[in-house]
Image (cartoon, rainbow over all chains, first blue to last red; front, top):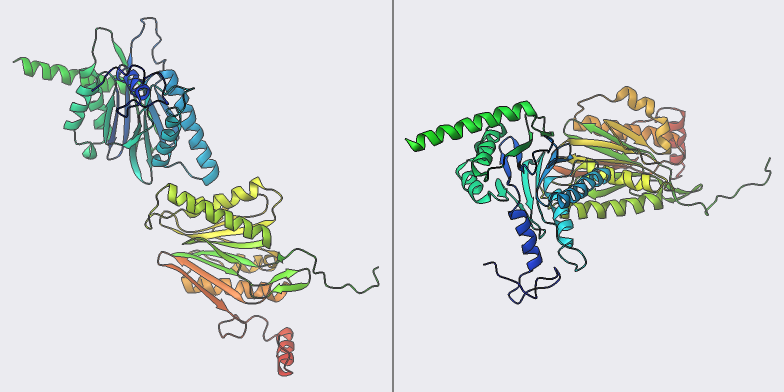
Length: 250
Length: 239
């Protein structure tokens, strides 16, 4: 499937003979090799999770934030080149603020996703810029209910029940497909997400889990999950994994 | 001071010296307006329609400069339609009254030279019946009822005393018609016919009340003014 695009991959404004834009595909590869990121849309809210790989033992806990509020009712998590991700989040925050200024109401999830997708797409059109190496997941909760969108580096936006990108996406997608997300609550999803993250994590180096939710429980506000609750959820997840391992080895 | 007789000015800009009223009732909103457009002291249109549709269930009441308010209503109708298309709204989920009212406010606020005192009222499935005042300058305030235009000065007291929450449709229409009749009787810049528009979940209905209709509110007919009118009519003077 993936071939060397020699000659046709130098610029995003060039098609290959078989109709591919290699620069956009290479941008996707940047996402594929970054830490795993999950999104889950449940019956009472949306959950976003990021695997923050430990790049250095000297790194302070809780720095290198990966989840961001876009507005009170919406938030985002980015996978891939985090600097690129921050630029997109900035733009999304601007769009949300602009929309509220003009129409006097919180931006609907689908509109926000459209705006972010249009923005990301622009960087796939011109030779003098490069595409963002980022997959952006947008969570929102308004009168249309909880919604989860993902925008890939090419600027395509889709609506999802559950989605995973990054290194551990194969295993994560597998686990996600076993869950009945539409029947789960965000609380249950937090436990499931922590479990999946710990299961698919690869490597001797540790990682920090960052969770953010917008649900009925948070009053439909986008909030990061606090340290105490996070530790609780992770402990329960790790215990469940160990129990399963024991079962398997019997 | 000026001993010369003044001639009616026809060089003044058309002005909807007006009375406009909007009231929220249990199930929707009732909008009302007079129909007089004056150019100075000359009535350039005695049967104009100051109740303009912005979308299927959202209407605009216009007072102030006729040109300014017509321009604003044209722009907002366009923006609202674009907005509906972009958001892929369906008939079950139309553009919200709040959104449209904010667009009107945006026009007034970003273009301070405009002289448009407007009221946006309508029905949507989210907040049901709503009335928003959008006066000159660019304020937006949601209220249970509001009035504007030159004739409104005479009926604040009337509405303050007669409005109550949870009116029925008929009560609300009577209230609006009565308020307009009172204002039209006292304000020289308001007159003509009473136009009423009622918007609720079932849709929008419009009607007109002429002063010769039975349903025209009984305002001052039995006072000295009323007697004068009758006398003139007996002599064949059309009033």
